[in-house]
Image (cartoon, rainbow, N blue to C red):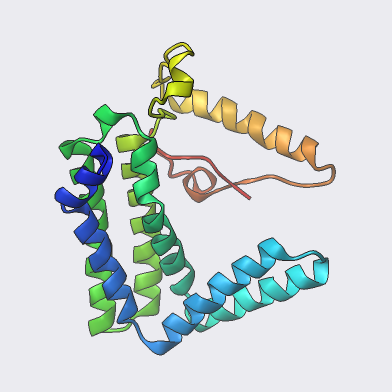
Length: 214
């Protein structure tokens, strides 16, 4: 096994991820059916060749979200967990350490606690909000641990100069970049409108917030 795989399993991170997956499987039939419909709707939307097919896929997603408002975040959580090993594999080897892995586990534990609370007392509003907050904390932990656009090295990249991460995270730099991004997106698709969502859109961003755009 490679180093990142050893860390993934030996650190307890793999066990935490598996535990969350098992907890999700214990959810009520309405939630599980809605989650399946959301996954199917997302797949159909991506594979759609016509506007009518896309609208049908969106209607499927909306109906499932109405039946179980917490289901979209649950699907997003499980999808993010599926990609976690690849995220670790792409990081610089020195970043895959006990401190960073502990940060990831600490972000996942409250999520599972809220999921278990839902099993004991189903409250869709509370779980929807908890999963939304939990996902933001999880993404922030990933960025702080393995992010900053740092990739591991391979033989093909050994011929290229070493990449130095830009860790100047001042909010004003992000604002300048993000504003240009919105303008470029709108220029790319004439007549479109690009807007901030998430923490930037609500004005609650901190130094580690990412850029979410509608």
